[in-house]
Length: 416
Length: 217
Image (cartoon, rainbow over all chains, first blue to last red):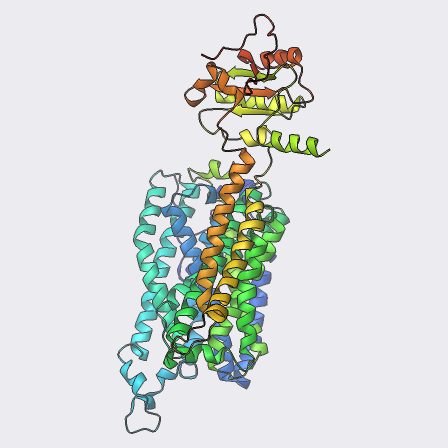
């Protein structure tokens, strides 16, 4: 069997493999229409260019808005990575028909590295612990708490850590994505075992890197505050939003024609169950964090919530309780609701919106004492999302929409 | 009217009433799960509603073949146990903490939601679980120590290697001859008439020759 050719450098960032579209079964091909990926990509690039204007006007606002949008895309990719690994580890059969889109989403990591560059320029505006004067005992800005954390919170080590996270994530993404695409043209029977093996050593590394990445990117925005469950909180949100996004994409694909009859209501029911479950999981973790801090009642911990319970932020906190947990929980609870692809798809889009609000609620009170929305919040978020979605569909247009030689595909297609 | 409603409710639980003459229904054996599945589908198609399939293990697709629809356990659980447990947990936390025995613990409010959520959650789960089990038992008509089917010696094999379809005499379409022919056409064998002789004072009806139910010892 012919091996899949690798891409060369700049193209490698977008898709590490040459197209295998010709070998895909016709019913598993995305329609030959450049607009599918070019339109979201162009919109995304356009919005990012508009955001540059915002950077000139108000740089700190730009950096915070950009960080929220960037962590949103990061959580999409991380959620997809967990999705793919956990399905391999459990040898899930139902999922095969809906596994290719999350696999293609994995290769968002290299683009995210490139998109991280603007944040490098904004470290001073974003992270208070990058200011050298807080470590100088002679300075009026001297902060003994931050001085005590200096061994961890310093820029060189921060960059080393970020490099390590992305090395691990890109490596895992490369292995899982290329193994699956290679299987499309080469039904090598050892591939499922290799995918399981990668997932097995990848899972613990994933857990550690996601937790520390959440501390570095989000928790250290308020460097005095700490919460040991924050990594799980970020993971809960990441898997939550990835499930919603994947489901919403499949609903759109099925309604537009490709994959109609391949991905059917039983698949959406199973995706809906996961969405339902991780709505509750997010609430469980968010509440655990809140209750322990409430009960402990230690000022250095409660301050973080204090900021988010006044000056208008309390409205967002309320919105998270209702919109991130209570309503999705009740809507997705009935059997019949999860069998309705349109409803599950709309909930998927809602999951993306509410997860962005969650990240906004984590990051933005550091910049604004009062609840403030800025147009940059939207342009940065949708701009980055447009780039990610455009490149996702670019990869999907080059390969089969379904892992067509997976040994469990027939069972997944027959799911009922 | 009420009696009729009660009868159909009991029938949905698998508890059927015998006809005059104590005829409870017809029991037929089938050779394998596929034959039983086919028979259940055809019996349903023929318009019967009061029938049940019995097998040593669950047969995939049987609920659909019998036209049972979705289980109602979830809905009943939610509207009884879940809501009751939630409300009771909330009320209990408030009444105990703020009304009946207010205690000042490290200056915390007598009643506050954050520490009450775990208790409300646990009571919600507990009541949901209890309501779910109760609903499951009720919908199955359990516990049911007496079932006329136990009069059939052959039926004892249902826990081992026997696949049975039972059509109750209470079904409006039931006709001893026509129903027996239908079961035979579908591949049923060892067809026997089951009589409900559970109540001692009832006089057993004369049994047609050749269709004698197996007598109890």
